[in-house]
Image 1 (cartoon, rainbow, N blue to C red):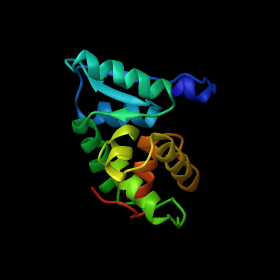
Image 2: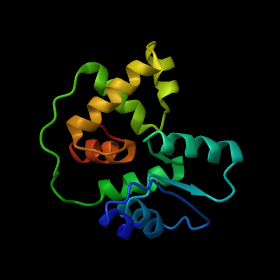
Image 3: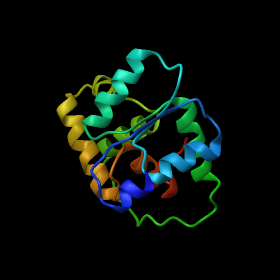
Length: 148
């Protein structure tokens, strides 16, 4: 994954593995995995992950997301994310992103269209300097914009 990223390959990768150790999960995410699923995940979940990652998003199972967030929280480094000003709606979307909700779920919870959610997610990516959902939540946690 690191070599693909270094070469600028536009490849989007989902790690699909039996390994659920923190170092494997963190290593894959840091190397550029857009998703991380454990074998044994229901096929519907795998297909949804493929659709999400293909569309430019990212997906981590709740157990995996917890590992990533714990890692970020225990880094002890000052935030490298500059001060970010979010609208109230962007903050609502960000909080739901941090909970692992899909655009469709966020839209239903907020009473807006999926297109509106996609607009807010894109705005969050820009403001946070993130390339995907996982990175945006990670940067938001580092900046103290959201907690888990």
